[in-house]
Length: 253
Image (cartoon, rainbow, N blue to C red; front, side, top):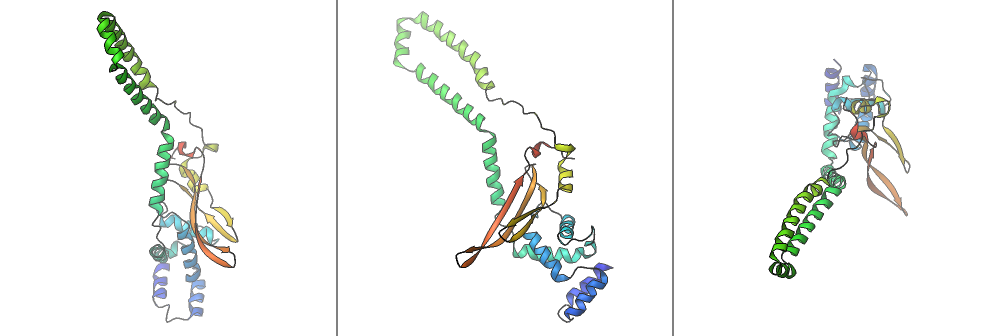
């Protein structure tokens, strides 16, 4: 009944007076449209919407507005419309590019040993080919054919025996998993972790907790701030990413 009563009020907001709309919201226990829309815009600008559902967004709004749990469920339809409008105005176009760059850097960082080992194997193969085709090797084979054949057979046996050793070198030691503190899981972290409150200049920023696509847990947020430069003020975009160490190894549930 809350949704059906609120939608006609939104459609006829131009005809009704602010006093009437405010008193109607207070009477029905709903948050005012201006207050709710301002909170939605701020939260959309500082949240990663790819991993946050509308239900989770309502919980974050309740925390931001200091409301009891489930207080905004009766306004979920109007919140959904406000979220759509906020996304259309401020869609994060560069998020995919940033995530792709982070993934590439992480992949390069995680596999430096394998790359170095492949380079060493290729270098040793080139060295063996150069030694086999050198003039000194040809002359020694003409002068002492029997010794050359024995040496080549010995070289073959050595190369066969050393090949597994070279291939075994890239194997990395299995890292021992560090148990999460207090039996935390990724799901319980996302449920229990509270938004981080940061102060940047004179602006207070709430960064919600989340589980990243890489499997690590942490906090992520984005916002715009005004920064004084001399006698002027410029608008700057900020992005925050805080990762809990070794949380990628935590169990899912």
